[in-house]
Image 1 (cartoon, one colour):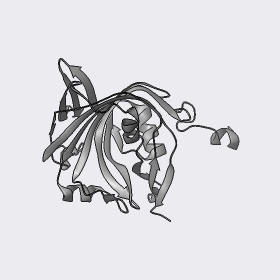
Image 2: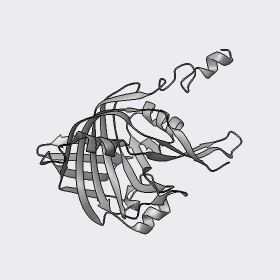
Image 3: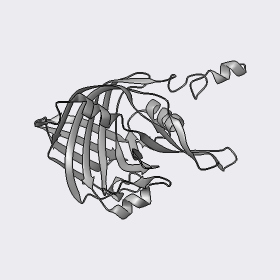
Length: 247
């Protein structure tokens, strides 16, 4: 391979990259979000500067099922998102994520700095209940339940699309071969080309179990605010650097 060949590759490994060039399109992507109040000090300890918690004292535990995603296939993920501000603008900071397939784990970490690790998330409709679970190393660490399609959240799909299109921020850390940091940045992006197919709110419950390698319970549940169930088509584009810790 010459220099041009090398620089045209979408990623590693060079002979069989884990993912193609983006952007990436998701069809019938399904979200199960549980918004809950937690310990403000625990939030503060998890948010990197210059981000600031938004002051609500709430976070979002989410399950996402992706049956049709270009370049990645079919998979599920689960994790925690923290509402924050950056330079006075409302953003979502991704605190941790667990997935059950390699390509989006690799692409998510290498391109956007998503804090992705291997896990065993599941999002299913069990009888009359929307049910999300997460297991790690053979142990159940999270379970969420919500009434199934009881209340339509909004007659305006644009309202939901605005929520899905909110700026997301990740802490991207990639070490150098010398042992020091090579990349240490906050990166941002927005989902685009959003078509909302359904948006429901309803009663929900969430149970988190302490685990050293899946520390979702480090943001303990104090009070459930609401559950949200969303089905949409949308695209994940490339993003931008909003803060460079090495500059």
